Image (tube, rainbow, N blue to C red; front, side, top):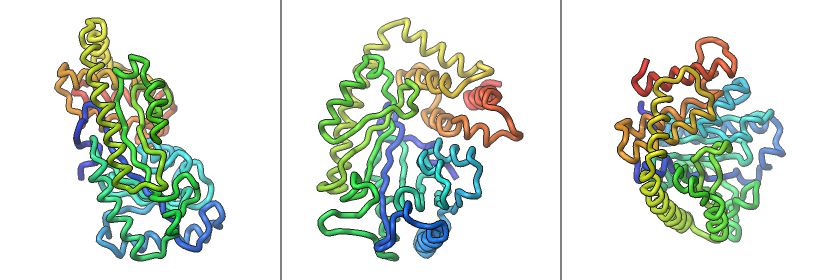
Length: 334
């Protein structure tokens, strides 16, 4: 089965993916932080049973995090199937992951249920429709904590209301080159949105999301976020055209692709820097590599994921050689 990140969606030159996350809790049961391991396990089994007795039976695999190594949990976080916070938990928790990895359901993370759906490109509507169908399974099979005044009740008051967080992963090399991220963050922050670095290492990939879930409907939140995204996409494309007029910048793009195809060692930080330039070259028509190939590489080459995928135990430094090998093979070089 093809993975969701191997696809291509609307505005894929700038928008890598769309994500909907819904936070839900069972009524009259303490939040996970107040539950014993036995209570957590019992609740996770009940939630999994609800999925297995629905139209989604057989679509998800259940993984109990206490059966995984720390490295395996970090790998799940790198793939955005669980949160970094969940990867660090010591208490019992579990995650349901769909066969194509487009949907994950974190059980007993910060809330009893954290349902996440992802789509390639700018496609929040389809992501929400899938999330809503699965959400109905929980609402119809178990009593969910809800208040007529506050909406869905969540462990974090910031998520009250819809309990929904919608987000895009954006590739903004041109906006970043113009040093516009800070001013963009300040501007959209006043409107109830945020934009943050995806990797925290100075790369050109950012997450744009809504910060308000109370007093607004899901459709309005999605519409507003799409509107902000459209404006950012438009500005990024204008800046890209300006960058391409400089021969030195064009040279950087070709050098980046050359390095990716020939390098024998690539750290994660260098990989994300080079893949950003290569992806920019694809959008400018310099290379015929599909976005799907780049998406697959980005999804599978985090350090923990590379270490987990090795045939034998290797060090972080040795993973840099393996990452370079994977990139060469994927881009058609040996």
